[in-house]
Length: 336
Image (cartoon, rainbow, N blue to C red; front, side):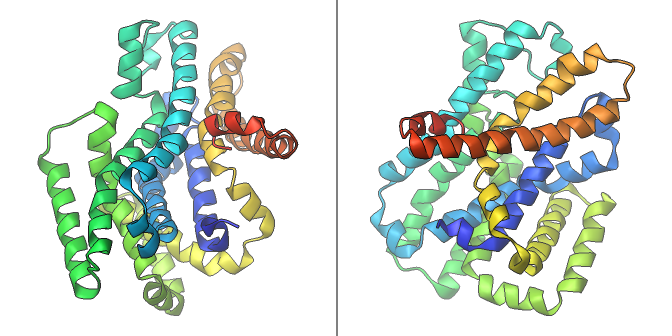
């Protein structure tokens, strides 16, 4: 059983974050982006993903393991886990968009079937949601040597908190003053590093924080839920409120997390990678084929298919992989 499966709070958080992503990608018309649910989802769902990633980094890389792991071997594993699926899915989406979508006004960064456009879509402006993977890889590239240094030098207690505070302040300063760098999503990595670090801190001090949350969970949960859904706060504050609400209720509900949910949570990465395809099918040919149908009905269908199809595919694939081990190499391409 993996570390995340043992921590059922993180299972619930991952499932919740994945559901938010599919909701956010269920837009059929521009009007969808004016809905409260869309604005609420986009106020914190990506910070939540980086928060979870930071927590899992801390959970799966305790001091002894971190000290014994070289940066080359660590980044090699992250390249296999993050960049190989990125290159595979991003390339497929690039080919689909550059060959099948004629209206470039529908694209944030128009693409064409040319080497120059392919390079831009790979290294500078990935296809839609795919930016998350190189950004996360860049975060590991930045933080791994820093944390290895802290652990090798046995910096703990007050020294550790001071070091983390200095790192956070440096990151905030870079995010504010540094010019935008699109290459391998460096600017995005710097921006979301704060939430990644907060995830690490939560993991490091989880017993103390959880004790406080359990004592006042109703007050904490409701306050941060109300602040989050109000959508009146600055972006960073709203993101923190959404994360704190999510952490609180996932903690309180963790004992009700069933083994089935644990199993499905193992498919979240595949859902992230593959949900685009059924959702784009609904948004594109289906919605255009039936213009008389209310677009919000299609949004609902898009949401359901964006979850159900990747999950069903993942379950079937894992069963086949257990019988045909050669499928394991293909599984790397799709998060399975």
